[in-house]
Amino acid sequence: MSQLLRVQNFNVSSDGVAAGADQSLQSPFGLPGAQALWSWAGATASWPNRTDPGGTRGLDDYFTRDFTHNIGAEIMGRNKFGPQRGPWENHEWRGWWGDEPPFHTPVFVMTHHPRPSFTLSDTTFHFVAGDPADVLEQAKAAAQGKDVRLGGGVTTVREFLDADLVDTLHIAVSPVEFGTGLRLWESPQELLDRFHLEVVPSPSGVTHHLFWRK
Amino acid sequence: MSQLLRVQNFNVSSDGVAAGADQSLQSPFGLPGAQALWSWAGATASWPNRTDPGGTRGLDDYFTRDFTHNIGAEIMGRNKFGPQRGPWENHEWRGWWGDEPPFHTPVFVMTHHPRPSFTLSDTTFHFVAGDPADVLEQAKAAAQGKDVRLGGGVTTVREFLDADLVDTLHIAVSPVEFGTGLRLWESPQELLDRFHLEVVPSPSGVTHHLFWRK
Image 1 (tube, rainbow over the protein chains, first blue to last red):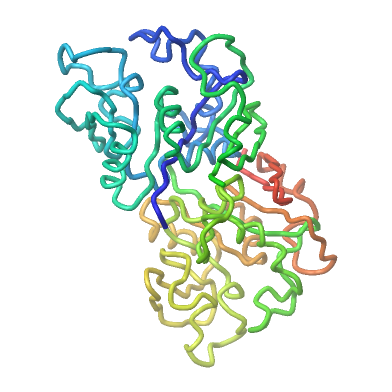
Image 2: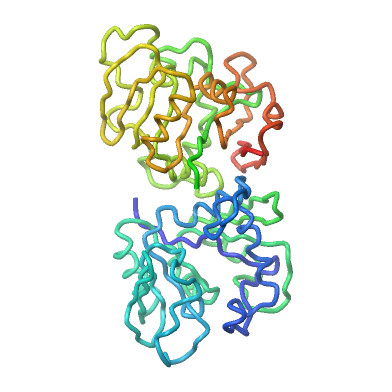
């Protein structure tokens, strides 16, 4: 089986918004109320940060659980990694995720500003320049036969879609509307020239959108 | 996290039938037309026996893919292992699955007739007597912290349900009716005293039933 580039558990509003323009240390998504986009995942038994027992084991849990399944590397944009822009002032910032990042694989952060790789627990962050095809090639080599997850943010997902490098997408659409912000799409119909689509409503109110290449 | 006993990708008809009474070498499920119960899984990209490219990557594929996820051992009844009854006449029969069984873990076959363990590829079959709780204890030890899959057949699943040892079930209900046969249930409502239930229809026509303990 060939290695896929997969978007997994990527959250957007009913009007396609995934983030806001005003990202900051206090507001990683730059979008007031953004937590409404991923509350469905936090309610599941398999949510990685769950410390109390319980949690649902229905459909949403299947998607939460699949986040790491057969994934050997992640690609993310610099804006997912942190709020800084331009050259690195120092190397103190090591991501939003603390000492135990939820990736457990090599992570390739796309940036034109070089920085040494570093490791936190079983996640190693590499900082790579290059176009999407170059970065994907590096990530596939690091994934050792497993699939590569395209982690976002939304600008990075669009960049890889424009380069036609994405094989499958799982997009969770939440029943909340933002009006403004950075959009994945105006409508999921935009992808139907290249992808099959299955739309699966969940009892949580989220609608899971599953795309795979024609 | 504690180890769960999970029923995964277990197939029944709309009237709850999972197998027939007349199992034989030619008819492993003892039920004419039984292939209608699992054709949804065979259509998915992740179906283990798929040799041609393609296949769906929608909801059904998530369930096919989850079959092996975090599973460290399987428990099955002797009637899932083979059509023989009573004492083993010889040890030539090594299951229906050829040299590469799809389990990839230890498998505990419940039988009162002893037989030595044997290994095919990365699957080792053990033959164990004892009640469900005893067998589950052995399987959990072998699973080394991962979950245990309860593989069936239907009589074995019912036996573990009666002993209240099952933590989660994924039952795929196909839009076909058999009228007679071995039933998992008269109705899924029977389990609602002990389990939550989410019912998720798939575009393939199968209705996925997800149960987890209250």
